[in-house]
Each structure stands twice: as C-alpha cells, then as structure tokens.
Image 1: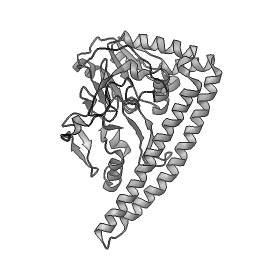
Image 2: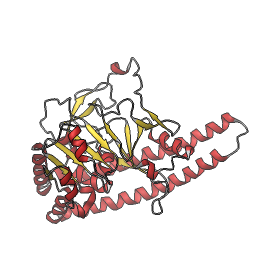
Image 3: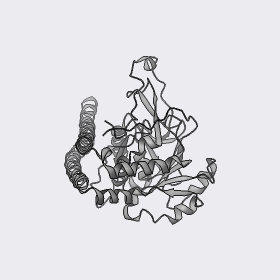
Length: 362
C-alpha cells in the first residue's frame, strides 16, 4: 500500500490529538472552546456512520456550522460506481478478512477457555501454575500478532495488485479530500463502524493528510507521527488513530465475548490502545479477565475512554502522565511514563524514513 508524499517539510509541535469519551451527550463544543478552536474551520469525518454519514446536524451545531463533512463513505460509493473492477476486488478482500477474523476468533476462544480453566485450577505448586498461565497468555499474544500480520499482508497484496492510488476515481477523490483538509484548522473524527471507517481512511490516504513523519531514533520504526492540525476523536474515531484496533465486549449477545484484534490503525498515536466505553463493555470486576486483556495490549497502554473522559496526547502522540489507564493487574491506575534506558537513544534505529507509522504504505 504505497504512501504518498504530501510535500510537508515543516513541523507543528503545538498540535495534538485529543481523545474523548462517548458523545451521546455531546460536549464537543466545550472541548473545542477549551482547545482554543472556537470558530475554527473543521473537517469532520463521519464515515463510520455509513449511509447515515450526513445525518450530522447535531455535530454541525456543536461546531457552530464552521465545518465541512469530508463525505468519505459517499465518496467511496462513487468510486465503486466508477470502477467496478476495484469494487469487486475490495469486496473479495472484505470477504477474506471476515473469514480470517472468524477463524482467528475460534482459535482465540479455545485459548481463553484454557486460560480460564488453568487459572481456576487449585495450584499445588505456585511456580508451575504461574508458568502455565504465562504459557497460554503467550499463545494468545501469538495468535494476535499472527492475525495482525496476515491482515496487513492481505491489505498490501490488494494495494500492490490493484493500485487504487493510480486509478482515476481514487486519485480525484484523494485530491479533493486533501484539499478540504488543507483548508481546515482542525479535524474531528466521530465513531461508528471502525472497520468501515478505517477502510475509507486508508482509501483516501488520510494518514499523510493528517500528519507527517518525524525522525525518532527511540522509536523502532525510526519515525513517529506528528499531526499537522489538532485532531479530536471519539469511539471508533479514537480507535482508528491508534496503532492497533482491539474489539471488546464482554457481555455481547452477538459478539464472541472475547477481545479480538481487528487490524492495525493509522498509527498516529504511540503506545496506546483505545478502549471506548470501557466501563460499559468490560466486566471491570473480573480481575483475571481484565489482567488478560491488559497483558495482550502490552507493550501498549490500555486507555479507557468513558463518559466525561478527555485525553490530550503529548505532541509525539503518547499518553500524558496522570492519565487514567488500566494497569498490568487490570485495575485502573494513573499513568507514569517509564524511564527510557540509557541506550534507548543510541540504539541506532534508522532515521529519515518518509512513511508514517501505520499508514497505508507497507
């Protein structure tokens, strides 16, 4: 999935990403005012709402009408109409992704069941019991990593084979979207269906439209993303901005009740996994279950985004100290950034790479 050069050469250290709790009772207007963005021109993304994308009256009111909806879902439908070959290929890709997700979850469910039984076992030797738990947690992490890797390979194969970035309808759409974003002072991304949202964000190559890469020897990729204008997001919008999207709903009657990795996100944040409405979706009193979830998130921080939450990340996209997070034991705690080892800044990672972490370029 090739990345595109946005031509960005400057830096914007003052711009941040702000993640919010659910906006059923919206406070976006207050947030924008507190960020000094009252009256600012805002690009909104509501593609996660799919065919309700433009039912955004309340959102427009919250932004006092100073906004333009990028209409990514509708633009995607227009691309499918103009390019049926690409539509068929994308539909096939989504069918394969669905089957991959189903098979991955089947394996995951067996691992979760094993973990539950091992934890319930009355240990005769604590050390042996602990090792057995660690082993099955390792199996779950291995399943997560392989699934994400295979999903990424499928996306790369699609973009390499069909080259949407060279097709007229996509090129035109990306140009129009990029121009709209460029004319705005900030970007707001709402929730909805995270898979649909991510699909449109990738198709219109939003990662380099929202941020640029900054050389960073301390990051394994050698770069980190720095947003070019303030970005405010919640729900699926918050999940899509992160490095990895985790689906979770402990008591769902339609979902498997097992937290499952979906795919990598845009990677505009670092070291966190967003958990919107965590208090509603997770059994926070089940410490074993919560501990398993936070273990699978490692080395990233599990960040709950509940009603009233508002987290403005650091300029380099990290969780600031003092933020409420889920700690290693699955309970909530205040985040404190680990002290980097002395060798971290001299590890010799590559610098100067042009691709953003997690953007559609492989």
